[in-house]
Length: 157
Picture 1 (cartoon, rainbow, N blue to C red):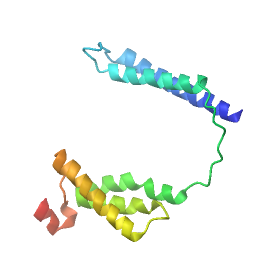
Picture 2 (picture 1 turned 120 degrees about the horizontal axis):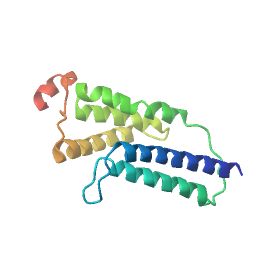
Picture 3 (picture 1 turned 90 degrees about the horizontal axis):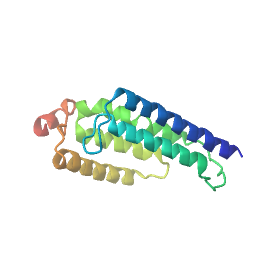
Picture 4 (picture 1 turned 90 degrees about the vertical axis):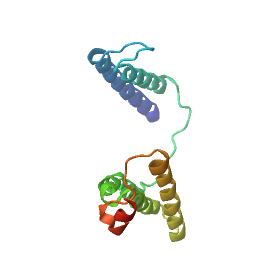
């Protein structure tokens, strides 16, 4: 029965957050209509969906037996959690290509089953894909190489 209590608590949290955000959107923002949406329409829609998800968690039985959890993956947490911060701290100085390469190279080692060859190939592939997508495809105004990269910044910046 403890897993059912967890479902009830999680559903109540979803419903409570949905009602709180829905009330904020309803009373603080103009809603508009489906054809002329106001700034409160989308937050109200998301709040209603959150309440519906909460009610589904509470009233629809999961039917799954509780699965035992394994040990906490400390290595993965230690590697993956600071990755967005490192990316944000280096994107302006290094530029798009080196920042993506650095983050991919760091995060690929969250797993113990990765070889150096696979890590380098994945880094090259994902960096090329992201540069092609974000710089050339979408045209985002992010320099490929930043001021920390020296001559590359002058050549490609």
